[in-house]
Image (cartoon, rainbow, N blue to C red; front, top):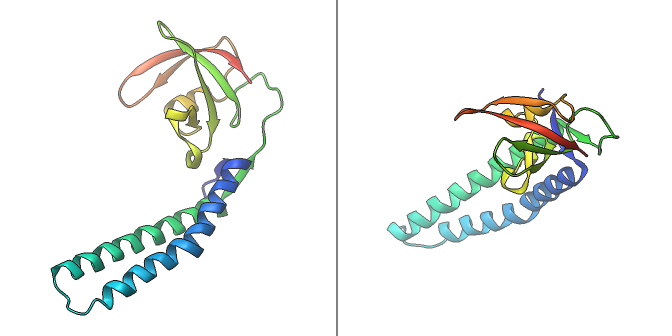
Length: 155
C-alpha cells in the first residue's frame, strides 16, 4: 500500500471533510434524489434533475472512498527537526537562475497545492529536492521542460 504523507493539519482537514461527506452531504444528496423521484411526471426536467442527483451521489461516494484510502495509508509527518537535507515537511527556499526566490513546503500528494506553495514530494520538483542541501544546484526534469534551481534555505 502506498504511504500518503500528511501534515497533522492536513490529516485533520481530510478527516473533517470525510465526516462532513458521510454525515451531511450524503443526506443532502439522498434528499435530492428522493425529491427527484417523487416529482411525479417523469418529464425531461425531472429526468435531468434525477440524473444530476445521481451524478452528484457518485461524486460524493467516490470522494468518500478516496478519502478513506488516503487516511488508511496516511503517515503523519511532524515538522522535521533541523536538518541539513530537504525532507518531507520542510520549507525550502529555492531560486531558478534569473528569477526571484520561491518558498515551498514539501508535503504529500494529498495536500499538494502548488499555487499555495505546497508541493508534493512526488512532483518532479519535490522529488528532485529531497535529500539535497543548501547551496546544491539541482536539475529538475519536469514534463514540459528541464530547469535548474539552487537551494537557498531549508527550514
